[in-house]
Length: 450
Image 1 (spheres, helix red, strand yellow):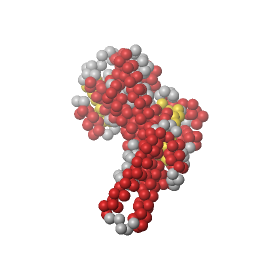
Image 2 (tube, helix red, strand yellow):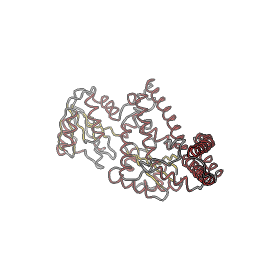
Image 3 (cartoon, one colour):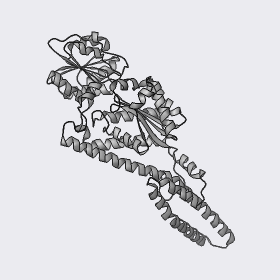
Image 4 (cartoon, helix red, strand yellow):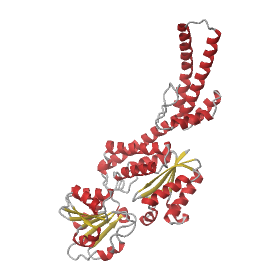
């Protein structure tokens, strides 16, 4: 089996198309299961954010799986395949691993270095675990991606060099309003992005933060964390009239702020930041006097947060260091995977050697029944040491060779040379995937490196 990634993101598609492809809630669960049920797919994981929808799958047929996943994305989005396909990217095996590690590190984000994506990959992993669409391959890959993302952020400071989407939005807000400290802000929604928005506003010195949410109690909990207040969604129109900055990110799937809810501003402009996909705010509000609306598409066009956009040497150095870490981690991960593939064959060889040794010892003892116990023990230990020494070098060497891209050929050669039953390594591999399994007796040369 091999890892396949098929996706669409802000790098390959306009926001209008991303908005149609975006999936969440029940639709996300259905897409996950539809992919997992395909005959070419053994495991499935879907990463869906405001900037990307990516399907990761452990597959046995590349072309069949690509076609199947493309068809599913087309069906779920309602976009014909011929219109969707030009915006899709496909990564396979090593490139798929590199892409996921880059995504988790924030290197592929609209705002390079933002930290939200790490939590979003974690949510995708948890959903796939809860829905039972993961196996050992994607589970370990996603876990490793999270570790890479954490390492990149802790070792390079890329999250400090790269602002979040909210931070970039507030930079644009200051261009319209001037300094935002002391302003009044309205946050629509109470999810993770809303929490980030509220916290960012508070750090920026916004004095009055109002949380409007469909579930009032959740709004109250979020408001308490930033010293703000909560209102019911029914009060949204009145709060819009009083706010200087509005950030909306509900994920409702339909318009939450319409043009008739936003009053013209003759003396005091208002800045609206729509971080939802599909849109929360009706684009028609741009026609209302005194109103500035920035959404994901206009943020994408602004160029803020992209590689080298400001010529900041520290930022460029952090990004370069992050990329080096990703390359290093990809190499280490692939070496471990390749070594793990040969481990069942090594265990099968040692198991066969042990069975042959025990059989021959049994025959020897039956032919020399007068041998005393101490002598029996010495003979047994001597033969076991001889077998271990004979097997040590080839088994260590084959594990080292297995780390290369042609590692599977060495395991195959070992099976051929020692006439190992090809079904035995596969049975050992399946057994080693059982959580909590202690392994196969006789593997004295180390276990699965993964």
